[in-house]
Structures are given as C-alpha cells and as structure tokens.
Length: 236
Ligand SMILES: *Cc1c(COP(=O)(O)O)cnc(C)c1O
Image (tube, rainbow, N blue to C red; front, top):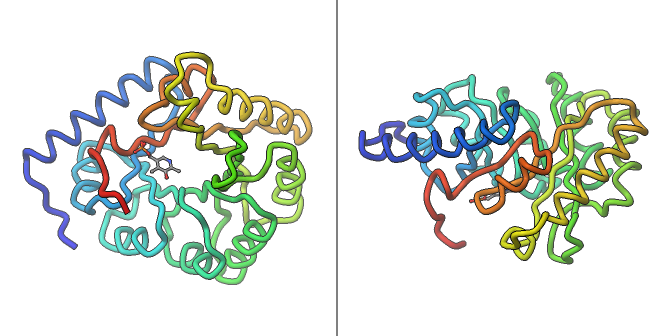
C-alpha cells in the first residue's frame, strides 16, 4: 500500500478538508473533525496527515488494520462501522492507536470489547454508544429508552471502556430538511438525561457531509465527514 500521493490530489484533499474544518470552527470552535476515509486509499489519508489532520474514521476492521499498519502511529483512529463479534478481537488488540469505537449498541458488544482489552493487556479504550434516534428499522443503534441501562453497564461494569459520548446517524429525511433535525434533538435529549443520571459530561458524535452544520448548531462536538472531503465513494 503506497503512501505517495500526487501534489494535485494532495491540494484537492487539503483544500476540501480545510473548508470543512473552517466551517466546523465557526460553528463550534471546540468540535472535532473526523475525516471518514472508508474505501479511500491510505495515500489520501497521508496527504491529510501531512497537512496536520489526525482523526480518521473507518468502517471495516480489515481495511482499518491494513491502513493502520502502514500509516503513522499518531493517527487517532475512530471505528465507526458495524462491530461484528468475531472481529472485535482484531480491532481491540491490533491497533495501538485506536482512539475510539463509536458503534457500541448492545451489552454483548460492550462486554466483549471490554474483555478483549483486559485479556490482551491493552489500555482503556474510548467508546460511544450508538443510538438509533430515527427509529428506522434497518439502522443500527440502541433505542433511546434503553440507552441509560447500557451506559450504566459500561460505566460500572466495564473498567477497560471509557464512555466518551453518544453517536447517531440521522435519517436522510431529517438531513435534507431545513428545520431543526429531530434525530439530533433526540440525541441531545438522551445525552442530557444520561449526564444527569451518571454525573458526567458526554460528547456528541453527530453530523456527516450532508448535515454536519446543523449538527454543530444543535450541539455536536464531533462530526464525521467523508464524501465532502474525499469525494464520492464507489457504491458497494
Ligand atoms: C460513511 C460514514 C460517514 C461519512 O459519511 P459522508 O456522508 O460521506 O460524510 C459518517 N459516519 C458513518 C457512521 C459512516 O458510516
């Protein structure tokens, strides 16, 4: 996997990312931009890394492993894809610079990730609970009303996990509407309730290419932007 990129591609990527980063800063100067690089070559990531970007998001364990192996070790990787039980070990064990797993939506996944981190003697890993705020059946994520119970299990029974926040993928319908995004609103409400119950602050990972500005206006502290930076992806 080559890390070399053409100067043309480098300029294009950095200019795209800088535009988004600028907009993020204007709307919330403490928010983080996670560049979502799934299906894109490691050389694209290297171009952004060379311009100072450090947080990258990937959806597939195998793809993340391959990229993490060749790319600089101070990249902060976010796993944002569906977590399969049989891949948890690879993810938890083999990427030292894994920053967070953002897609915990069952007790089973939380316990499995916690156990693997303990078994292989790895440090505490940040996690986000993925919440299905839109109620769409095909979407992953735990139902809002079940979120507190899972949060308590993570906080009280998973010493190798640090609950950093909540994550959601808003519905398309909400992302193209010009009104307040109801899915983001739901995540904010769930988060407030959990913060009160748990007595700790939670980050909010919400907003993608189509809706990151609205997400920031509604309180997002971490946006995950892919196609606005890297261009469109091949359809699977
Ligand atoms: C692919 C993906 C993104 C980025 O989507 P874009 O619309 O390309 O910005 C963000 N979050 C998750 C969970 C994703 O799977």
